[in-house]
Image (cartoon, rainbow, N blue to C red; front, side, top):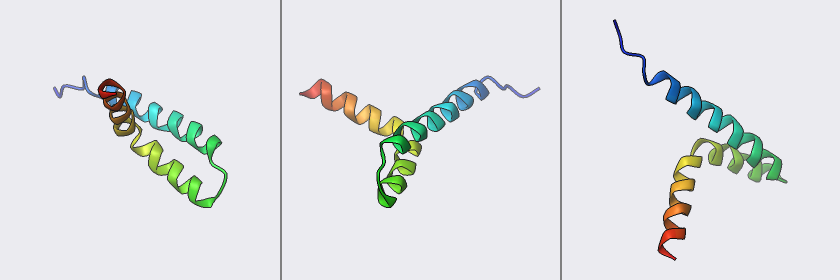
Length: 58
């Protein structure tokens, strides 16, 4: 039988993407800002880790 222990992590990541899209979409005010909101929603963990390391090094 296949191990499905990683499925919950994928679901949580998916919910995080949708939440990030909602947040960034509400902040956008023009066409390119909406496009950028979609990109940010997909890559929000990378932005979060970058900002965390930037805060630690400052």
